[in-house]
Length: 111
Image (cartoon, rainbow, N blue to C red; front, top):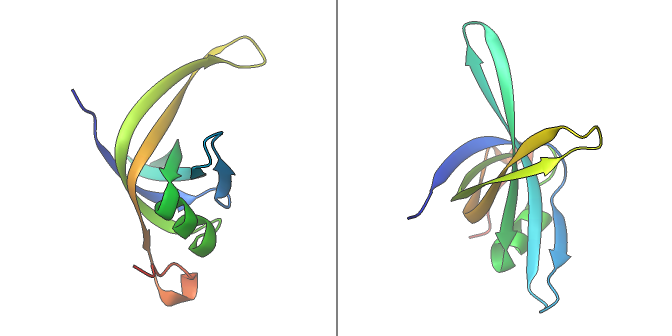
């Protein structure tokens, strides 16, 4: 089985680049997706990980507030916070991350 998700949202912080022990680069993004229903707005946060060339692109060209379209695989993780409460995290292993917006937003993809 395979799960697929496509989201469109804004970065809540600048992308962060890191490296695996094997030397592969990856970047993590915090993407906020707003949903307005019955006059109320609800925000869902996703933790997105992208790899290699895609990671290099997002760290070079995107920043906090950039609008992105993410296509990837959804994973749900359970954890316990500092207060001892069970929480869930929505994680996406990205296949593609596409910048959306005008040149004024500095979101243009070089690809």
